[in-house]
Length: 234
Image 1 (cartoon, rainbow, N blue to C red):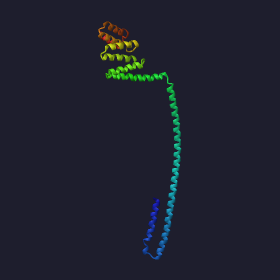
Image 2: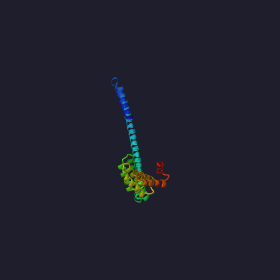
Image 3: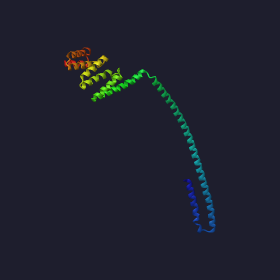
Image 4: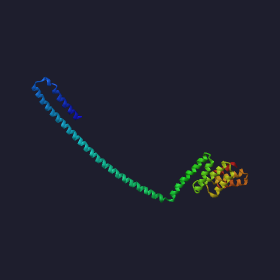
């Protein structure tokens, strides 16, 4: 912009004396021509100065850019080194995890099995709550088969027996309750199992067997909810 300003001023200065050319004497013309040459020389000097200054500015700008490029190259180099170091660290962690998985302790494996068994059992409970008896019974059967010593093994057998009652099959229910006591005699569901066996026996007209089951509950599990139910009905 400064360069253009100098040029415009120069043209303006040159044009002003020439406008009076037809009105002056020869001497005046000569003087004017001399002045014009001087002014032209001054304008050219100013133009050269402007060009030189512009060139210097451009050179400074290019130098600054080159310096910034070098700074950026250094930063990129440092970032690449840091990235490579992180990759090495990640590789070491990955290798350590692989070794850990290969040498996993039995307790770790047990933890994984407990999680899977819990998920399976809860699926069965959800199906039972939705009264999808066939689906729930199959899930509990799978639980018994896959996790015979799982946290819900005896409970799965108990729920399967109750499902048999719910669908109107007391004979199958009796078989399942009896199997539960044979396999898990110390089950937390033992008192309720004896109670259900007594109810089934009473419904089938087996009064002696029913009394035997009820007495078992009262004598062996006197503080249980099953005992409270028997006492309430007596």
